[in-house]
Every structure is written in structure tokens, then in C-alpha cells.
Length: 231
Image (cartoon, rainbow, N blue to C red; front, side, top):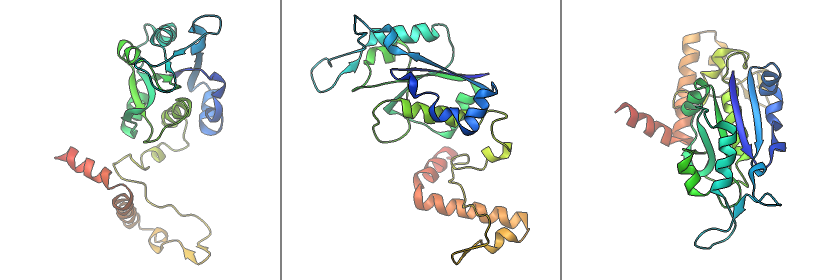
């Protein structure tokens, strides 16, 4: 069974949207497992402090290495699942990395807060910093939800048709082609004739051309990365 363990200061944020739709149904059927752990249980003193002022000065607070290390050790001391820290400075999350996590049986996800996490615990507990985009959130929880959702939907038995997971954006370094359904004419905009011709080869060719066009227009970096990989 694929398992996600989330370390957070706000466990009440979970399962959140993961408890609905495809992921929620799969969770109720036991296809995957979600565990949340409160980092503050390992906090210090009467107030269970988890943070302190940054060394060298500066604004905000930093999550303490000793507190977070204790939380990680309690959750997964001998656990071989990848240890991920959701962080805006992390390696951008890709569909390829998602597929690796799916194949690996799960993940331990640490949700940072405040100005960040003491660098020493990142190194000492081999945390892999992961980013879902070039922006800053209030904490790692929303990013963790996104990462887990991306993994769960690829688990066997979650999506209705297995093929649907292989024709999406980023699966082949291309953005996904446009989709259409009834009515045939919507406010003067009609479904392209090729999609109604019944010739599957022509339809496949059109979809590929559209995917290339959209990728060139919106994400030329994906094409450049693909060329570099092939070279």
C-alpha cells in the first residue's frame, strides 16, 4: 500500500481535498494510507516551542533542528521512504519525480513554516527539498496536498481508465492537447472536424500537433529540456 506521512503544525488541514473525489474514494477503500503527525508534540517547554530567532539576525523565526529531528525520528526512524521537505527553494517537482514516488511506495513529507527550517536538520536527516512553483506560500501544507494528490491519482485503481494517466501534460515533455465534447456548436465555436472524422491516425496526428503548438507557445523550456536530454 502507498503511504504518505505528513509532519505538520496543522494536521487539521488533512486530508482536506484529499478526502474528496478520486483520492478520497481511494483512501476510504484502502488503496493508500495517510498519516499526519503534529510536530509540536516534540516542542520545548510549557508552550511546546518549535522555532527560535534566526542566527545572525533578521526577520521572522526559524524551525529548530532539534525539534524537527525528534519529530522525524519518531515518525520514521528506520523508514526507507523518501523524506521530502516542501520548500520554495527546492528542486521543481516534475511528473517524472511523481512517478518515482509512486513506484517507491510512499513518502514522508515535512511541512515547513515561518522563515524556514534550520539547515542542519535538512542535512542530518537527508531531507529532499521540493518546490511546486516559483512563489512562496504560508507553509508547506498546501504544497504537500498537491504532491500527494499528484501521486495518489496514478495509483492502480484510482483513475477510471489507466490510459488517461499517460496522455496528460508533462507525461511526454509536452502540454496536453485541447479537449472538446458536446454540444458540437457552442456560441459559434465548433468542434474541429478532424475529431469527428473517425480516422484515429488523423486524430492522433492533430492532437500531437496541437500539443506541440501549445508547448511552443506556453512552455518552450520543456522542448529545450527535451532536446538537451536527447543530445
